[in-house]
Length: 365
Ligand SMILES: Nc1nc2c(ncn2[C@@H]2O[C@H](COP(=O)(O)OP(=O)(O)OP(=O)(O)O)[C@@H](O)[C@H]2O)c(=O)[nH]1
Ligand SMILES: [Mg+2]
Image (cartoon, rainbow, N blue to C red; front, top):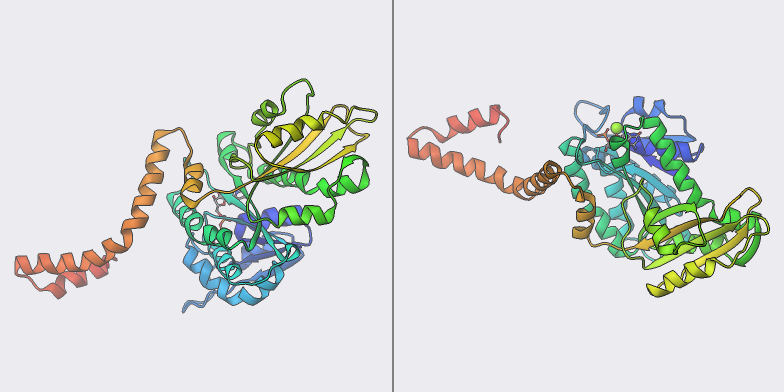
């Protein structure tokens, strides 16, 4: 089963799987999405149930505590969708990842894959950027280090904003793209097998590895080096890949076509010291050879941030840098404000308490 958390996560999960379970702190948001099952995460606040997390991962995390046991059991062996920018998806998914770190003896069938939507730094609010930076640096990197997650797919909203794609259409693009990758074992089973094989068990083993998964697919031209074709066909819906640690590919040829160009692909991976899992099939619906390829790569948190920040525009870089600096300095600033106020009050001979009261009223303390 598929699980969607928060607004974006719920829409994507439900689109992939009509039986998906969706989770939100907002009942009205939950009811907007057709799904197999809905879980309302409860925030224990004096004013009652929140209608959203107001982009605050802390609220999302509080809400996670109300669904923790149910969710931890549900996500085993499944795929979780969420966005890293908002409060609910970020907060609930962070809680989940942290709990996954503590589990022992997870077999390939128990691993959870994550499909995460990253914001487009140039045009989205800075809260989304801050929340994402935090998420990548802490919960996500700790979970990856523990080896307790399956593949992690990093969807990017860059193309959505750059090409002004309507949200609904973009969600279709993301899910359709993921479907091409997920169809690999089905095609291996239903089509005529010519070489290699990727059965369901092989596929589960591959998706249970705790690495980032960049998948892409394209019409294959046997006359052009595979590497050139791969570089020209990086999936624009995902964060670009790094050097692969593991790889998997499916080569589809038209009926009666030559299956042997797949040796070129094997050779390419051998040159970069990777031995891919692969399958070669005959697909009567193809007019030209078609390849679906997946690269598993690993990134340290700092490099991951670099990838996320990899944008040419100067002002976007400045915005991200500002977010990072703020994050580091915020706790210090809050502490210093009070001491600083007392110091100034003393200097001026006024009452410390008066100034503190004013500051408190202004929400500065
Ligand atoms: N691709 C895509 N991105 C979306 C969609 N909805 C929101 N986003 C992005 O997801 C991020 C915000 O996450 P949401 O899922 O809306 O927020 P949430 O997890 O529900 O958290 P709160 O609303 O703050 O409680 C931003 O980067 C948005 O651009 C969607 O339908 N498709
Ligand atoms: Mg929301």
